[in-house]
Length: 424
Image (tube, rainbow, N blue to C red; front, side, top):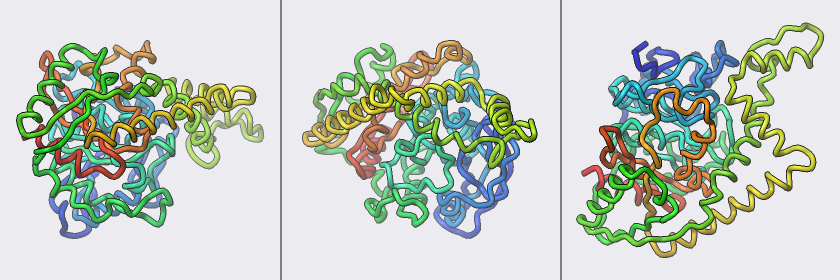
C-alpha cells in the first residue's frame, strides 16, 4: 500500500467489456459491495467479510469497461469527517500529508488526487463525498436522493445517503455519474427522473443568465481564507455571465443538530445486525447470547461508532423519541421548505463546501464536536435530499478550498454546468 493509506484492499478487477469507462481505474469505497472482494466498511467488525454479490453501481461500472483499483479507506461505517476512525489506520491528504483528506470517503478522494485511481466512488450521508473532494482538491458529486441505486451499499442512515462520483475534473465526475445513475429494481427509492440526462454533456461551462443564490448562513463564520476563495469563485462566475444574490435559509442553523439525531438514530437501528452471529466478529461465550453480542460489538466497533450507536439508541428510547427524533424530523421539513422557497428565485445555491481548511492529523480526534460542526454546510443538502457538487475554487495557505453548488431535486445538470464554469 502507498504511504497515503488510501486503500484498505488493493486488488484489481478488470471491467467486463469496452465502454465509456474503458481503460479507467475506479477506487470503490469500502462500504460498497464487491463480489469476491473484501468489504470492511473500515471496521474490525467486518475484517473478513467478502460479499457474494456486486452492488448495482459496481455492476454498472464493470459493464461500462471500468476496472476496480481496490477498496478505498474510509471512516468506520461512514462515521467521521477525517478518515481517522478507520480500523485500518488514517488516510493522509496527498496535498499535505500532515493533514486529513476529509471523510468519510477520504480514501476515495486521496486516491484520485494522488493519481492512484482515475476515478472513485464514494458515499455521502452528510457530506462524505464533498468534504474529502474539497480537502483534496478534486471534484465530488452528491446526487439527488433516488438518482443512484443504494443496492449493495452497507447502510448507515438510509434516508440520507447516496453513492456518487469523485474525479479530477467536473466532466470526468459527470461521465461516471452517467454510468451509475438510473432506476434499479433492487432499490425501491430510485426514480426515473434524470435517467435520460447527459451529465457529461452539461459540463460545457455555459452560465450566461444563471442566477446564483448565496445563503448568508453558510458563509458567515467560515475561515477568512475560505471566504476569500469563495467570493473569488463567485466573481469568476459573474464574469462569465452569471448573477448572484444573497438569500437566507434560517433553518440551516438547526441542520447539524437535526442531522446527527436522525443519522445516529438510523445508525443504531442499522448496526444492530452486526451481532457476531449473522455478520462480523464472533464474541465467543458459547451458549450466552447476551454476553456474546456485547463482546462482539465491544471488539468489533471503534469509539466513534459506539458513540453514535449509543446516542441514537438514546434518542429513540421511550420518553425521548418525541423530544429528540420527532423534533429533528420537524426541523428537516423546515429545511426542505427553505430550500424550495429559495429555488423559486434562483437556479443554484453556492457556499464554501467546508468552512475550514483540512484539519491536521489528530486535531479533531479528542474533540468530536469540532468534527460535527465542520459539517454545517454539507448536512442541509442531505436532509433536503438535494444534489450538490464540490469543485476546487482556489487555496488558502496552500491548502485546497472547495466551492459547493447546490441544485433543486434532479438538478444535476445545472450544478455540473456551473461547476465546469468555475473549473474553466
